Structures are given as structure tokens and as C-alpha cells.
Image 1 (spheres, rainbow, N blue to C red):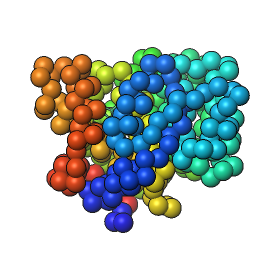
Image 2 (image 1 turned 60 degrees about the vertical axis):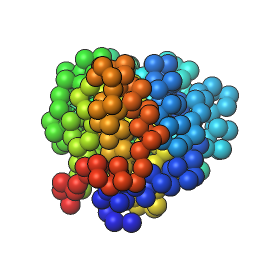
Image 3 (image 1 turned 90 degrees about the horizontal axis):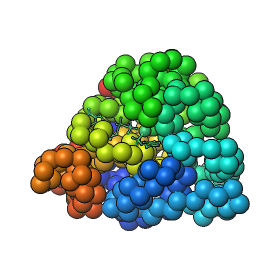
Length: 274
Ligand SMILES: Nc1ncnc2c1ncn2[C@@H]1O[C@H](COP(=O)(O)OP(=O)(O)O)[C@@H](O)[C@H]1O
Ligand SMILES: Cc1ncsc1CCOP(=O)(O)O
Ligand SMILES: [Mg+2]
């Protein structure tokens, strides 16, 4: 597989569609529906499971785990920690979405505690990644007030300190391991008006991690963001009223309908820093 190219994106997505990996999602109430639908449309198999009594067993049968901090409470955080611990012990890749990190001290502390459990990937908006790196005052609830480029240094610092890949979403998604940076310029701004668009692309990253060859964590993360963004572009072009409601429908449709030609001609991924 080439390091980062449209062909590599297609190869990874084909593997998702062929293998249909089971992605266990501990995610928020807002995101459950769209995340499950995004995973299904893209060819993966979602299961939302967060009960303290079953999370570890569920990790045992899953190919990837998503931990999303969107509607957290003490019970949920306990379940997230158990699940992440089991994933680490089993070698199952897991991805963290630090929704609203920085909004309250409780949320920030919970996100930092999860980060210490070594996710393979963290995907957040710029404000969330800035807050994870210790910068204060950038968040507006779960929405970003900064651009992805403003959070690149923070993303590199979080990646280096925690031995993970960090993806900052935005007009250009930036994916870094602390040294390399891949940029993905697919997507449309209207995606920010679909609640849990970010949450669902993080779930999709889980599906791509499940099929990624050893050492291709950055490529798999970039591929998921590119495929999701491209489906957004095509979904908007086909949307009857060009609003968030019909974009949401179009996004799901194109995650199902797109093929090799769409990916090879449409994805915009490139190495920004080697
Ligand atoms: N200005 C933009 N232009 C194009 N795509 C965008 C833009 N902002 C966000 N996106 C895309 O929307 C999706 C959700 O990202 P974002 O809104 O940053 O996350 P969150 O929902 O967690 O705040 C991502 O796929 C991202 O690439
Ligand atoms: C609105 C909201 N409130 C708690 S979680 C959530 C969903 C946030 O989703 P995203 O970060 O993908 O926009
Ligand atoms: Mg988010």
C-alpha cells in the first residue's frame, strides 16, 4: 500500500466493505443513530454497548472500539475505562472522541483520564484538541471556535506525549503522529450543522483501524476522514434543498453508493509534513 494516496484510501475502504468489521461504540445519545447508520452505509457493523456488566465481553467480540465522551456520567466513564483496558490487553484498536473537552473541569478530567489509557487515535475538533493539550478558553460546548491549523501544534504535542495519532477535523482535517502530518481537504462546511457529524466520522475511523495493516494508523485515519468528507460533498451536490437535513440523507446515501472511480477522482489527501 502506498503511504497516502487515493488508491490507498480505496484499498482500505474496500477492506472495510469486504470484512464488515464489528465496531463497538460507547457513544453519546445524540450520536448513536447517525453513527450506526454511517458505519452500516460504509460497510461496517456497528453495535452500541456501554453497560458496565458487558463492555469487556463486547470488546472480546469486536474488531475496534470507539469511546465518545459526549453524554458522560460516572457509570459511563467506569465502563469506558474497563472497555479501553480490555481493548489494550487484547490488542484491539480503540479511538477516542473527546467531545466538549474544555467545556467543564469534569469533562476535561475524564477526557484526560481516557487519553492516559492509550487510544490508537484521538479525533476531535480544534477546540477539543487545544483543550486536551492544556489550552483554556476555546470551546463553545461541543462546537469548535478555532480552525484545525490553529490546533496543529496542540495535536502534535498530544500525539507525542501519548504515543497516539491525533486527528483535528475542520476545513482541512490534519492527522499527525507528532512528526508527520497528513491533510485531508474533503468535506463541506454544512457538515458542522449536522449534529454528531464529528462523532460519526470518529466511529468510521474505528472501522478503518480494524482493517488497517500494521503501522498504517495515520493512513487509516486519513482514509476514513476522506471518504466521509467526499460523501458529504456528493451528498450536498445531490441534496434537493442544500440544507443540513437533506445533506444528512445524502451523506448516508453516498457512503453506500460511492465506488472506486468516485474515490480515485474525488479524495484530496496529501502529506503536508513528512
Ligand atoms: N469548514 C469545513 N469545511 C469542510 N468540511 C468541514 C468543515 N468543518 C468541518 N468539516 C468536516 O465536518 C466533519 C465534522 O467535523 P467537525 O465539525 O470539526 O467535528 P465536531 O462535529 O466534532 O465538532 C468532519 O468530517 C470535517 O472534515
Ligand atoms: C450536541 C451534543 N451534546 C452532547 S454530545 C453532542 C453531539 C456532539 O456531536 P459532534 O461533536 O459530532 O458535533
Ligand atoms: Mg465532536
